Image (tube, rainbow, N blue to C red; front, side, top):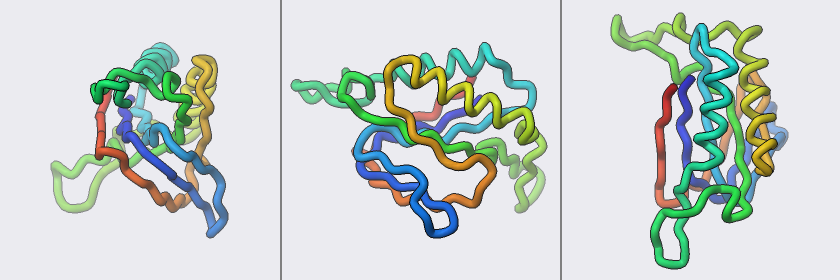
Length: 145
């Protein structure tokens, strides 16, 4: 399981020209599910994302989590995080989990994050999503379990 976690201001996610989800500030989290990933990995991922201290405190140090600042998470499924370009110019996605197994894990991570008291908005699993994101910092963390 891999996440690209970005500190973000206003971020919107649209499908077919309709805004589906929007956050004003917090984290945009692009989540890739790898073949064979488990619920235990999902639990560890959610715990790390919820506790990640990437927001500045009163002294200008990254010392606060998304929950600490009252921020939101926009959780976006992204199988392309497991794209393999080592054998040519066209990526292979054979390492990504099949949709029927990946979607329940994606939903599970969202539910776990909500369990930490964080407002979580989501994309549409498997859809062609358009995302307008205001990167804050920029701060980008890549976390893989």
